[in-house]
Length: 282
Image (cartoon, rainbow, N blue to C red):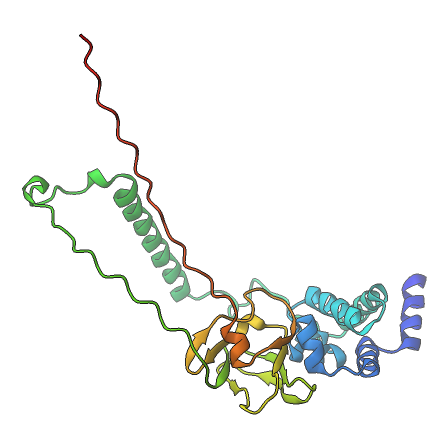
């Protein structure tokens, strides 16, 4: 008990977790968009942490984990921040306005309805029927009814070889358009001198066209896989397919066209060598 009192007094002198994280962020010169891009934490959760509203987060585990990552990004002591977050969460548990509602078995408003029970039974029947159909057709195909026609009477049809599709022509130039496919993607476009062409959070479906007069345009983002890229209306490979932060990557038409294109996999069938005919001995 005395140890908890000393910890609370220590945190009272240093301020709340949200105030300390906000002060460290402003001292480092970061805004919420940059912290969200570096930590992969949504901005609304960062705002809740700075406001001390841990109840707005999905769970206590998220509150501790997000606060630890936030502290690491702005240069604070992770262990000290974690201890203070747990202390503030314990204080919130004593407040009946922020405590979660308890489930009372006798409350008829919380008991599942009859319609939900019938739906569960119907779903179980459909699942069993699907498993039986899969077993009977995949593992035991001979148990089904006999075919109406004799397979021996059917003549094998000769399939004509379909002509190979001509490969799509590679783009030669034109406007470069970035289309975002995910919600809340932070990105910054700038030219070779460091001048910002665009910086901010793009929603799903937002597009940005690289200005034609931009000299050596480049990109920085934590979601390179979220953008589809077209040059002159033709798609080119993404900047990356993995979760990583890319920076100083040229995004002009010539650089994007020169990026390697993954080659399609080609399956090769090896024929068995012919067995030599036996030689007759006199």
